[in-house]
Image 1 (cartoon, protein in one colour):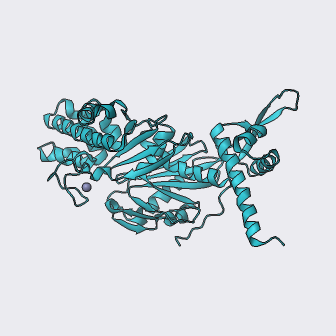
Image 2 (cartoon, rainbow, N blue to C red):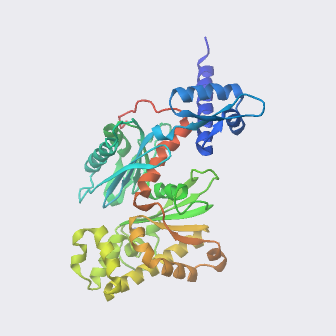
Image 3 (cartoon, protein in one colour):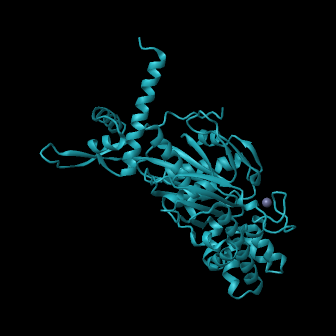
Length: 412
Ligand SMILES: [Zn+2]
């Protein structure tokens, strides 16, 4: 009988080998068994065994063959991304966006829900699971969901040692304090759930597919009602690298300035957050009807009428100025080579204010730091957070090298 410790080690080794082969193949796009052995450092025999298992699980497929000098043709393998399904969720304060993605994170279906004023965990979970059901039902031949990634506007306290983080969410702006959100969504979605701060999820999408591609240190900002930023550090893999989130929105840009909903005053968010921009417009005597159709539409209209409405123009200019100072602070503090203005409000405001944001940022940074950075608009679109969140279960699959077990639906 094999001792317990040896059996565990064998299992761990097998898992490691599968993960190594699957990850390298995913990054590479396609490879022969021989190339995979060279890429992973595993023996040919081990690669052959691992590939046989991955083929049997449907995670990998034969993708043709190439002739080799003097030998048998070599079979080419690739990850069967088209048969893998993941959901990505963006829990925003104004809108919940949910997408279905394949293993290469191509969007297959998107939908959204409006939570209105009821941001209680129970209501949000109901909307999220309902939207997941809608996107997964959009395909005729329904393929089982392998995992759900969720971006939340707050901090996630992961539970170390668990395969998925049923983690607790602390999101003061939603009124959530230690909400076991992952477990609640998993119970309705019948798939493992991974949680992430939404700025970091957006950062992942911008690094993987958007305006952060090729950057070494990109700061990806998320502009919405709330204002956040994630520092994304490339690790040379095509999967984006690691990220750190910050409370950039609550850095002070004006001593004794406008009160912020965090309880402090003079915060960046109190000037450039979507609600704050609209509030400033009304305070200066703007047209009150603007906000009747909600924050998103109100902000769109405000920027649209900046050509003809003097108050709107002044508010847009002020917003660009304060955002430029906020960006300058990021550059002075973090020395990034790229700053990306993203998030739904970034999409609305960005095109009109980017030149002025650059100019103000230049004025307030040291020349060598400004010379090393480019400031650009996000390129991952309105679904960036959802797509970035969907990368979490994809990365979990690559890390584990195997299909997830039947999900635990307990919040534990
Ligand atoms: Zn604040």
